[in-house]
Amino acid sequence: MLLRIALIIMTLMVLISTSAFAATSKKGEKDTSVALRGESKVGDGYKLFFDKKKKSSLHVHGFTRLYMYFTEDPDKNLRMPYFRFYVDGQKDEHWAFHSRFDYRQGHFSNSNSGALSNANGGTTPGIYFARAYTTYTYNENFKIDAGRNINFHHKYDVLALAELEVGLGFFPRFKYGNFSFDMSYIYMDESQRMSPADEPEASYYGGRVSYSVKASKDFKIDMGLGFNGSHMEDVAEYRQFTPDLTFNLPCDSWILNQFMWRKYTDNIKPVIENYIEIGKDFSEKVSADIYFVYQKNGTAESVHEIGFEYYYKFTKAFMIVGIADISGIRADSDRDRSYNLKSIIEYKF
Image (cartoon, rainbow, N blue to C red):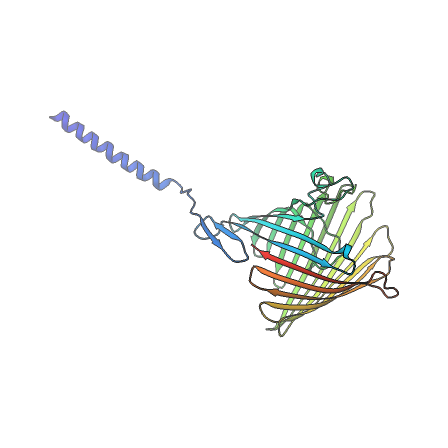
């Protein structure tokens, strides 16, 4: 009888201790399960969240465009598809990564991509890794990118003659009040070249400082000064300055000016380009602008272009752009003058 009671007591003690240990273990273990939540927005792809606070996410989005170019010479007419696909990730408030895939005729991954380049040095259509970099955000005033990116240091992507490079490097960005400052340093060798040209190893550096002031509710001024340069052994280097000025005016209108001055070490005459645009948003769906371009490439004769652009947004995802311009305008000759019509059909996904 005593033995039976002792066995019952021992059994109860074992059960109690086991339950306590299990409860303690569950309390001490970290929950590593992931509760996935998805969010889809028109024109902004699909975002997958890995936590309830939406601090960790994966964002997949992109767009496709169809360029159509019509001119007086039928042999120069062009229809070209363009595809861009983004994959962006956010780990927490400090770490993120960004990647971009492009498809465009006339582009390829690098000069060693034999499968995408032909014997004449030209290219066939292909998909290539355009961007791939990591971003560390220290706070709202400082962040830095590291990886494959572009040393873009002018406000508007409207300059046809500007020197830009894509390669491996680091790109710090600072902000203080109304001032902002970004920098870049890229090292490039033959394996990273976006053209089959035989060029040596090189370093590219640059930066841009900008300042904005809001004078009133409907009047704002943005100004900036960009700089790019190169360093190559036994090859001409360049120094490039790109100041810009923007006036955001009442009635949803604007005036902007993007200028470029570049000088090579082996050339006395600089390369100059100036872009002026006057535009207005007529509604959330309709906007239009007129622009004027001046180009002076070294000792060559100056060339002018004037054009009109019209934007219509059917939805947040679907837009069409119509452009009419006169290019190749020269002071003493009309040999290169051309009247052109262009259209861009864009769909964001």
